[in-house]
Image 1 (cartoon, one colour):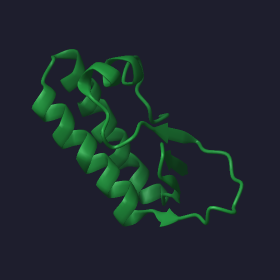
Image 2: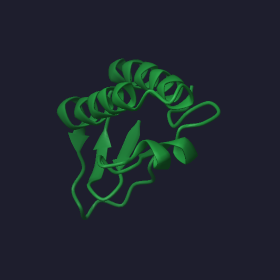
Image 3: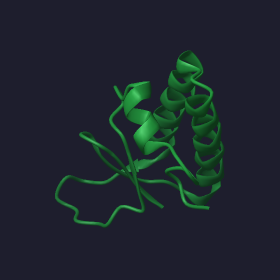
Length: 92
């Protein structure tokens, strides 16, 4: 899966890591819906860190379509309410 972190770049994330990102996404949606701001930030920070740490960064000159676009790391809960809804950011 190709994941873009807005304002940062793209990463290739192995299938083994996609399920963990999906779980973090589901938990982040629940935190947003419950207005649990601190919990949302913990989960979103963990999601971003997982993509950065476990993903393979694609070169800026590589043009590849993204499967998922994560909001920027400094996303607020108010902004997340518009992004993290329904089935979430991560398909599946």
